[in-house]
View 1 (cartoon, rainbow, N blue to C red):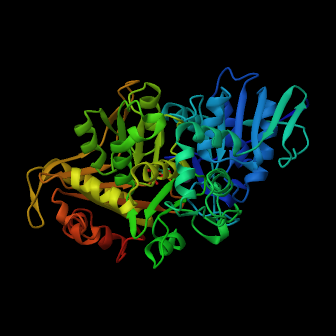
View 2: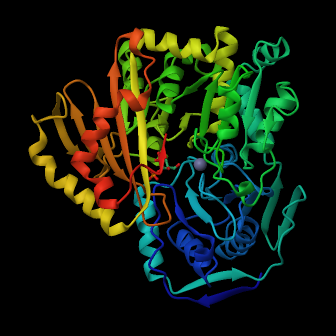
View 3: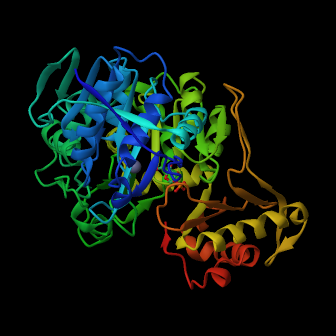
Length: 545
Ligand code: G1P
Ligand code: ZN
């Protein structure tokens, strides 16, 4: 195999964020930009000679081209085998599963998740390690350091590979397997859930459903599992063909972006169940007839009912949530006497807890939940969990949620995002918040919210002892309410400021309030403390979820 070494110079903006490197496609198309980053990944790894690498992406614009480059660089780097999804397609949870199933050294996921795709939109690249999860901070720090000093990259002189034909190739000792993108994942799901029961409930008409794949990666997965295997009516899965630009939409499963699904479920003749997933298939939105389930509630309900699912029937070892996620799951953990962990935002922090067997279920407010079956959040897994639950409990989604609130009370929750804020303005807002932390405790704000604690979240990993500081500003009140401020680590334009708001309602008769109304006073306090509207010149958040 002929290998050419090309001289290069570093780009200074290749610091991985919450979930890998995300930039505009045009940035990735700069000469050597992708190559520098991929070579820096390889330069940060040791002892991978002859081992397996899994590669796939969500099918967005630049996916195929990037994969061809990565194949040539992988060959030059000396891996022994490449496993690639047909057409270059693999969902993020499927990559995680394949790494684990085939004992791969690691995997590369090409995706910018829920960000829009197309020549003028976003692209991304993320490295996952041998447990199937996102690389830990120690690795991404080393990777970033390597991007700052890189001076060459290596490419093998091989032809472009046909990504669409299943099969095996051998190129000068490098084995390349093009595999069915869906099969291994579908088999895993069948081993976790009671497919027979779900199939019967669908056949009996007890469950009708709609799934919005948002023209993204879960289309082929959902079509196969929900329609072909479980027998949902043809057309139950819609927007099912992955498109390079996601049909011009934001493949982000929330009420704002998955409005086609929301209109169906909140409309006149809704199905029993509705769900959507994002660009790369790790997020989920769950709805029932006339009800939207917040991701924080969804996690709590899954934890409370896990024993009804075959894979978790023996009990779960513990639960975890990211810090800004509502405290609903904490209440379940107390009642079921389970350990409950609070981690920084981003799935990578759950990996150690899952590997050590300290938790079985985990989730984030940002429409992500998952379990120890892989090391990523998993959109379709959550959908199947809910279908299994509905089939077992023979209850509507609304009844399941209301019963939960009856037992545990409701953590009324919402998140306000201010997107594309000028970076200096955003940093000044965070500094302003920081400067108040020392003196806020004990103060009463608004009409009777007394501050119990005000700090910046710092995580001490109980497994490896690592410390992650500056993970968001938290202000907790004596009545259990909470406001959290964070800067996004996944945005690609300016800064995105997130405000997370929650209050607790124990009285089930008051649990049905509209979140924006119930949280109005906290929203006003958040503005008083941060002056986001005043300083950014915005009248309202860009997105409310
Ligand atoms: C966002 C979410 C976070 C999630 C990440 C990747 O990150 O808030 O929970 O893990 O996307 O899907 P952020 O932009 O807030 O850094
Ligand atoms: Zn995603």
